[in-house]
Image (cartoon, rainbow, N blue to C red; front, side, top):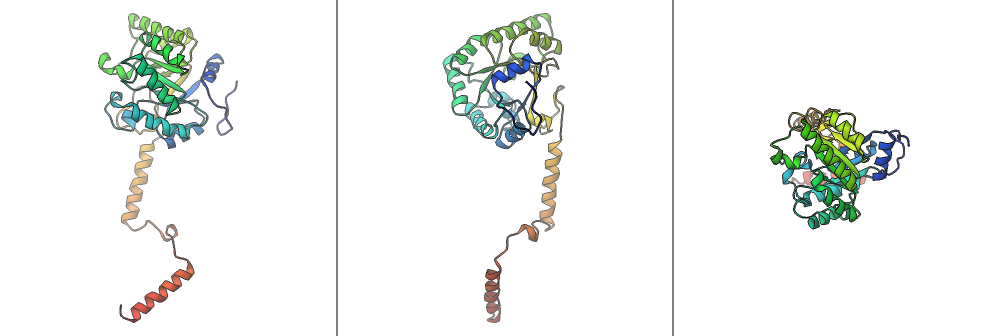
Length: 296
C-alpha cells in the first residue's frame, strides 16, 4: 500500500484501510469537521478519517464544554459532513448521555448515526468498563472507535482537563483499558492527553490502530480539531496543538475590508451590478423623459 499524492484520485478509506496502514507503518491522518464546507475541504485535501467530534459543542455552538451537546445536534452536523465527505472514513462522537444510561439506548443511538447520519464509525469514551457495550454495538454491525486517557465527557469526575497515566497505577489502568477495548474489537483507539511513552507502549501492544491527540508521535495516527489548526478557537491552545494557518485573521481582514468598502461607497462597483437590456433601458429612458417634459 502506498500513499496517494494530494490531488490524485483516491480509494475509499475503510476500517480495514486503517488496520492496513498500521500494519505497513503508514501514518493515519484525522481531522474534525462539522459542516459541509469544512468537510469537503478536509476530504479533498486527502485526510484519511473525518471525525464529527462532540467538540462541535464549543467550536460551533458556543457551549462551555462537550456535555451539553445533544444527539439531535450531533446528527444535524453529521448529516452535513456526510454530504461533503466522499473518500475519507466518517466517524461520529456519541455525545454524553447517549450511551452511558443503558445498552439498548446506546445501540439505538449508534444506529441512528449510521442510518440517519451516514457515519461509518461511532466513537465512545471510556476504557474497560465500556468493553461489553462496544461488543453489543459491534454485534449490531456498527464499527466502534474507542477513546481513553483524557476523556472530556468525564471532566467532572477527573476534576478538569488533566494529563492521564502519569503514575504507575494510572499507566496500568490505561494498559488494561486499551487491551480490553482491543479485544472487544474496536476499529481504532483514540489516545488523548497521555505521556508519549505510555502511548508508545499501547500502540505496540494492541492490534487496533491508535490515533493520538496530545499523546506523542509514536501513535499510528494523529487527530486535531479543524478550528484549532486554523486559529478559529477563542482562547489559548492546548500544548499539543500546532497551528497551520490563521483563518481568524483572514476572516477578520476580509470582513473589515467589506465594511470599509460599503461605507465608502466602493462596493458594489458597476461591474458587480446587473443592468437592464439595451432595448429596455432605451424604452425606460423614453418614458422618464416624457414624465420630465410633463413636469412629473
